Length: 218
Image 1 (tube, one colour):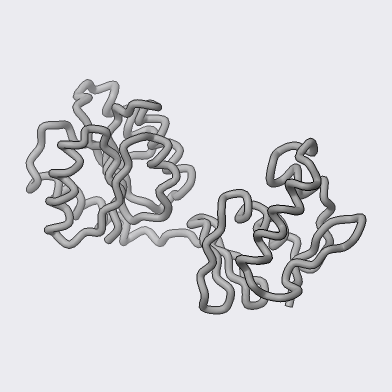
Image 2 (image 1 turned 90 degrees about the vertical axis):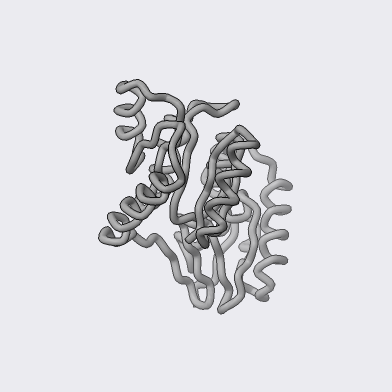
């Protein structure tokens, strides 16, 4: 099971990460809110609510919005009732107050994961010919080959895939990907070129001169 440990205290993070790995978990560490929200798909998040760059309650809310099925346990020194209520309302499945024992945390993890296993996780995927896109996990495959894309490259591919087989105008792509029509044509063209290179499939992303781009549907 893949666990995201969000903890800004390096000593605490190192000890907890080692304890989790001894129990067979794959651990991804994040010390800031920014690292946490960019960490990628995991099965469980252990989330400290006191982070240097953003309040953990907001991070919890963003993680829950991004993935409704991920299990989240707030692991924090905040012991006030209002903090517990805020954490649970933001989307945490459980709330553990520091200090705690590893035995207690393990029991909490097992209980949360049992509940998660009884709730089917929704899938949000697109299939266009040999191209498969996992929208929630932001992962892309061509046939059986996974393709690593930068954030804007993924957004660009998704905008094209959602209208596969039809021409998507340049200004529409600029609006979808950059949230503005002021992005330069050069910026769009550079990202399309990079996307084509990574997909490495001739003719998959087609240029319609003077209009925009089209993702081949079949």
